[in-house]
Image 1 (cartoon, helix red, strand yellow):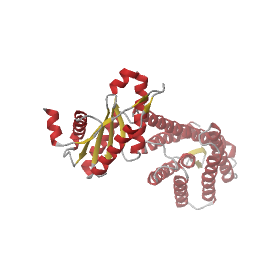
Image 2 (cartoon, rainbow, N blue to C red; image 1 turned 90 degrees about the vertical axis):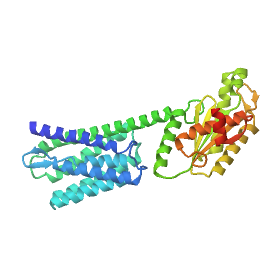
Image 3 (spheres, helix red, strand yellow; image 1 turned 180 degrees about the vertical axis):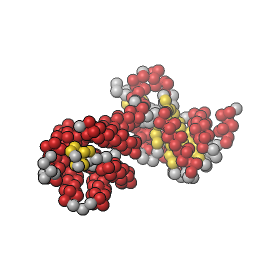
Image 4 (cartoon, rainbow, N blue to C red; image 1 turned 90 degrees about the horizontal axis):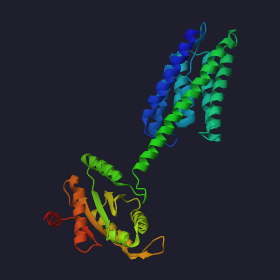
Length: 370
C-alpha cells in the first residue's frame, strides 16, 4: 500500500509541475482562439506529458499496471479546444499500439476517444468555468476510467481492490489538475487586466505616459531591425490653465474628456494616442507618409476648433490646440531625438500664435536652444 501511495503522489507531483511549466508557454491563457501555432505546440507538449505518464505506472495489485495518461486529454478538451485535443489523443493511441496490439490496447483507444469527445461536448453544452461544469467533467472522466478498467480487468478477480485505488487517484488527479490550471488562467487574466489598467489614463481612457514610453521604446527597438517611418505628433490644449481658473477643474475635466474623444474619433486605428499629463497629448504613427501625417494633424486641429465644448453645467467653451510634428527619418535622423524634436515643433506652434500644426525644422531647434 505504501508503494501505491508513493506512485500516486509521484504522478500527481509530475502533473502539477508539468502543467505549471505549460502555463509558461504563453502570457495569456491558451484557448480555442489562440494562435494555431501555439495550440499545436500546446497539444504536442500535452502529448509528451501523456507519454511520460504512461511510463509512470501505478501497480494497485500484483501484475496490474495502470496510469493517468488521460489527464492531459481532459485538460486539452476542457481548456484548449479541438486541435490540441486531437493531437494528444492521436499521440496516445499511436504510442499505445506501438507497445502491443491486444484487447487492452483497443479498450484504451476507446477510452481516450470517448473521453475527448465526451468532455468536448460537456464544455460546449455547459458554462465553461462554472463549478457544475468543473465537477461534471471530473466525474465523467473518473467514471469512464473506472468502467473501462472494470471491463479490461474483469477476469482478474481483483477489480474491487484495483478500483478502490485507481478511482480515487483518477478523481483527485483530474480535480487538482483542472483546479491548478484554472488558477493559472485566472492569475494571467487578472495580471493582464492590471497591466491594462496601469497603462490607461483614468480620466480620458487614452494610454498614459507610461504606456507611451513603453510603446515608443518598442518602436525604437523595431526600427533597429527593419526600416520604418515613425512620426510623433505632440498636442497641447491652448490656454487650458485659464479654463480651470475661470470655470473650475470639473469643467476642465469635461474639456479633457471631450478633447480626447475628438482625437480618438479622428485618429481611429491610424496611430497610438496617449495623454502624457495635464493638457499634453501625443500621437505615434508608423509607416505613414509624412504628408498624410501632416494632413491628419490638420484635420484633428480643425475638429477641435470648429465645434464648441460643453461642460456638465451647460457652459459652452471654444478650445483650440497646438501641434508639433517630427518624423524619423524625414526630420529626425536619430530616433532617440524624436520626442525632443516634436516638443520643439510644438513650442514653435505656441510661439507663432497657437492653434496650428508645425513640422520640426533645424531653425526651430536653434530657436529653442537660444
